[in-house]
Image (tube, rainbow, N blue to C red; front, side, top):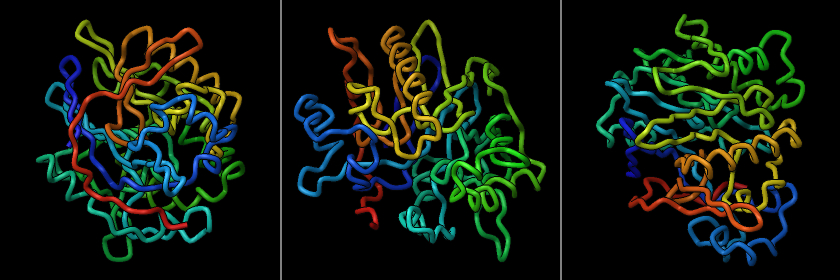
Length: 308
């Protein structure tokens, strides 16, 4: 299990699945295969499988332990959820050992104090709830569930989320609304802290109100980057954006700001979808930035080829 220590925070990766996902030319707008020759780290077998022409994609949570609190950042896709639309087939009626992987970290659902979702897309909120008979109930019964205020409003009421990305609407119904109905939801604004020392900042573009998580101390810094980045090639070529970004131009600006922050602070970058070792540093070069994977040992818990 991947584990990092930054300041007084222990960080562990809780895997849902590590898979050969979309070909990069499908997932990444602006990608050119020649980029892999120019940027060997991005073409490394940990991030790209030459035989299949697909990128390795991880879906995981980051589990933080800070000041006696256990905080789960993003909750992956979830099991048993109907995602029958063609673009979401990879998430349809999953049966993956996510809770077993959490148990392998010595943590039960009842132990989680806080769940924070960086944004409310399908692969970041799914384990917020689990099936109980005909109902979806909170998976983490003792947790405070924290969502960004703007992000929540983006997807509910008169928000524009269902207009710009209608396929995500069912996700709100089964993985977000039950939390609000249970009275367990809290809303937070950019600039506020989840707990002392752990703050959220605006990272618009992938969704208008996406938030990232930052920690700064004299003993080190890290940033959990939500979906600002999907693949290491974007460190080298920041203009490349995900096809699922709602506002691509804004997403590029956010990405460049994040890379500058990581390079200037030597902050550990903790993305949500990079292949092993799933985290690293950003270093400046004469032409931009490079990605330096962080040393970690991990035996993947669940490998699969994405269903096409």
